[in-house]
Amino acid sequence: MIQQIKYYKKLEEILNSSLQSHEVLHIDLSYKQIGHQGSLLLNSSLANCTNLTNLTLDLRYNQIGDQSASGLGSALANCTNLSNLTLNLGYNQISNQGTLNIGSALANCTNLSNLTLFLVGNKFDYQGLSGLGSALANCTNLSNLTLNLAQLQIGSQGALGLGSALANCTNLSNLTLDLRGNQIGDVGASGLGSAIANCTNLSNLTLHLGGNQIGHSGASGLGSALANCTNLSNLTLQLGYNQIGDQGILGLGFALKNCTNLSNLTLDLCYNQIGHQGASGLGSALAKCTILSNLILELDYNQIGHQGASGLSSALANCTDLQNLTLNLGNNKINKSQQLKIKRKCYKLKRLVVFIIDFLC
Image (cartoon, rainbow, N blue to C red; front, side, top):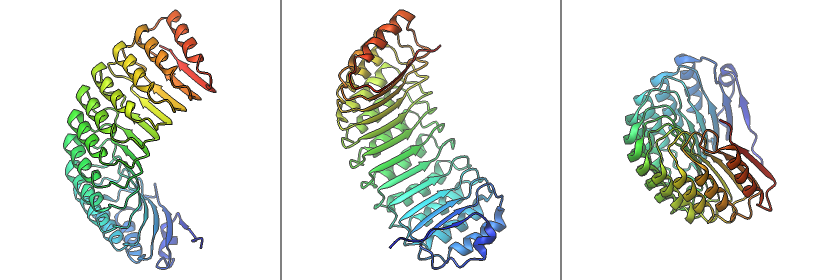
């Protein structure tokens, strides 16, 4: 039987409705400035929705703060039948206490199989994140998880705590983590990788780790972990604006050699310190991914010369199933004649349908 989805975009509509019987709810109150009083009324209504199995709740930019976030957590704790939850609490001045209480509530939702949680632009750190980690550790039935925790300064300690929680989510098949601008460093990246190594059922993985002060050991540690995820078919790895050099990229390449089931790969490594050795080594690794059909490589603003770019493009010739290739080598050390040679090598890929290459400086 197809369940009817109820959509609400005004607080007044929610308060004047009988929500108890609903199993599927979509509430969008983003940018409504409902504040503390409005959130109290909303939480009171949600607490009665004990039959809910699917909930989408968008409360971005509402200045609800810790007290209201805690109340929301208490309401969700009653919704023990939830299997699908999307919760957007971005930019709400929520600090550690509010986040801890939300985590405590989610820990009761043990039937969750799909969870999407946006907490970008709030004010908590690794201590608040520990509450979310405890909740995730209880949600062992999760198969799809999306977490947006960008720009929160959780540091390496926060990344390690999050990793410990994810290590219990061994049933995950789809994972998206956005940890941009959190200063997790090498220790945090390696620890996060070690946790993901336990998620051997992953087929789709997206990691946004840009601007995190990750260097050689962090990239290598992350690579060693990904080497265990042999079932990956789709991988997006955003590591731009870090301090990764040749050694780190070679360690990362080691992982890709094992991911022989990859068909779609996006690697963003812009604004790092990759030279010819790293670029050639990356190419050698990608050459093992023989069933790749879609590849995006963002390598602009590195230190790659003709030798590295040539080695990379020669290796890609082994990816005979490639149909779509985007290669960004802008602002490196490759002159015009060398650029032409690299293009010619890529054009030899017989199945290529879409080819985009950028050398712009």
